[in-house]
Amino acid sequence: MPALINPSILSADFANLERDLQAIAAADYVHVDVMDNHFVPNLTLGLPVVQRIAEVSPLPLDVHLMIEDADRCAPEYAAAGAASVTFHAEATQAPVRLARELRSRGVRAGIALRPASPVEPLLDLLPEFDMLLVMTVEPGFGGQSFIEGMLPKIRRARAALDASGGHTWIQVDGGVARDTIGRIAAAGANVFVAGSAVYGASDIAAEIAALRDLADAHA
Ligand code: DX5
Ligand code: ZN
Image 1 (cartoon, helix red, strand yellow):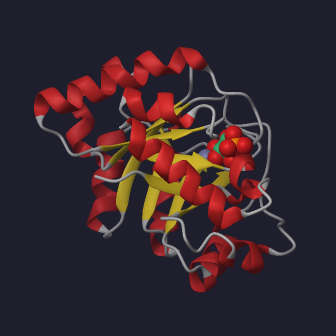
Image 2: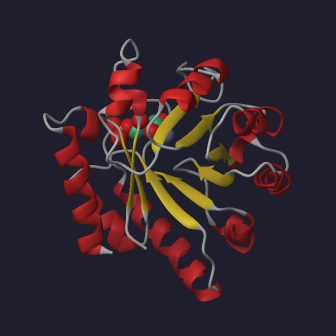
């Protein structure tokens, strides 16, 4: 499967969101970071804004929930028009029940891990999820540097999926740029979130193409 590039609008201009959504039309999904100032020390946007983004976006929405009480809140983002909803393993009581609920609403269900959370307890459950998100920075802010120590975690998840014939996507979020994406793809990820690398580029479409080519070349 070719690499998917999902630019994060955390690095977009929130006063010009529609313009900045059009600017990434050549990407695969738009990555929407929802933060509640409790699960992470930052506050971004919530349901009404996600709903409007879904109405005007040229791309399907990949919503990354960095919120507490995901069990209660995540299904509302499916109803708001997301194509994919990812919640944190650390913020849910019943990840399988929640994933099944999301899938029953016709959206892809993703589960995310903070850098310090091990992947091993999830390996047998991966078929219940459409995507595993391996955070490669501490969630909360764009523009941080990639945590190299996460590469073995990605490799172990890929090995477990290959061994079981699973089709769960592996997404990486945090510090993805031209100088890191090759190593991340080689470790086994196939979905790449990039915020500052994409929106900080002088030619956004060219940056998306370059990231995709680098990922495909190293997969
Ligand atoms: C961080 C967010 C990321 C963020 C990545 O908590 O989940 O999606 O936008 O930003 P960069 O690509 O700049 O590391
Ligand atoms: Zn994110």
